[in-house]
Image (cartoon, helix red, strand yellow):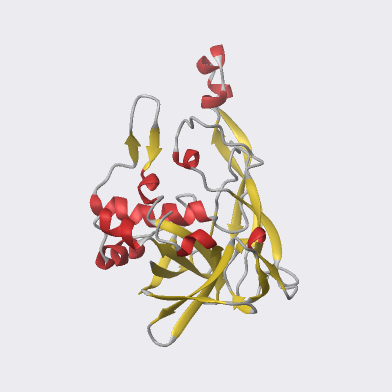
Length: 284
C-alpha cells in the first residue's frame, strides 16, 4: 500500500452539495471522501484523455471516478495553516438557478418558469490551507498501470474541490511506501467516522458525511441513494467566532473495525489517520 499526501490552498472556499439535494442545497462542512476521490480521478482522466463518463450499457452510465474505486482504499481531509488565519464559514448565497429540468408539460413552453431563486450552500475559506491523505492499493495501481510519476501528475492536476467554482492551488505532493500501525493514544488532524474510535479531548465536532457506495458514481443509479445514507464523522472543532485553529484530535480508543496508520514521508514528516481495518489489507 502507498500513501499519497496532497497539500493546497483554497482561493475562496468550496461547495459540495449534500447528496440527494437538488436546486436549493446546503454544503457539507468539509469535502467528503467521495469528493476527494473525484478530485484525484479528475487528474488521471485529464492526463490519460479519458472521457468524463463510462457507458457500460444503455442503463448504466458512470462517472470516470468509478475507475478509482478499487485504487483509493481510503481518503481523508484536514484544514491546516494557510496564508492567513484559518477560517471556514458555512453560508448560503442566493443564485438564479435553471429549473426547466424540474418542470413538466406546458411549462416547458413558458420561459417564466425556466428560472428560479435558490439558496446555494458554500463554505468560505479564503486563503485557508488543507491537506488530503489518500491510501492507495498497490496491486490496483499496477493493474491500472498507474506509476508514481502519474500519481504526482494527477495530484498536481487537481484544480478544484467540489463545485467547479471551488478553485484551489496545489502546493505540495508526497508519496510514502513506509506505513505502520500505531496504537492509542494517538493524535490525528484528519476526520474519520465516529464508529471507528473515541476522542479523549473536546476539540471536535460531529458531522454527517455520505457513505461511499457504487451507486454514488452512477448518473441514473440502479440502486436508489437515500438522504439517510450518511454516517457521523469526527472533525476538528471550530473556535469562538469564524476562526478555527489547526489542532489535533486525541484518539483514546479504536473500535475492532479500525486501525491507526502512520505514513512516513521525506524530511522526517509523518501523518497519522484512523481508517477502517480493511484499508490495511491489500485485498478489498
